[in-house]
Image (tube, rainbow, N blue to C red):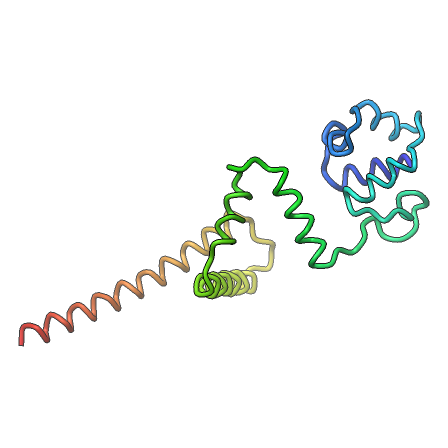
Length: 169
């Protein structure tokens, strides 16, 4: 079990200290578990499985998948629990607070913009055979948005010119 515990911790990309902090134990305790010096109690196994959504049969015996499947409701609940532990001024907390205040029309616009972003990324992915970096995707998105702004500016200029002609006649 000690090797699976270490594999779990590394899969979660946590140091022994961060893993220990989440479980409320000392760092050296995690190290002793991973080295097989100390056995992991049933209570700790339960805590690990609950905290990290780990399949207990995998942790104890190596059977099945490392993680349990998460349904949408549990995923949202886990995110909210995490937010409650965040500082009130953290980006995640501010972002969720902003989302909570959106009107129906705001949600519709957000959905529209997200679809545009996905369309742009799909187009870019189709034109490139290798994986795109975050910076490349961001640059492509900015480029596509600036094209849309230029089209909007041109439309506004045409409307303004038409209005000026009508007023001057």
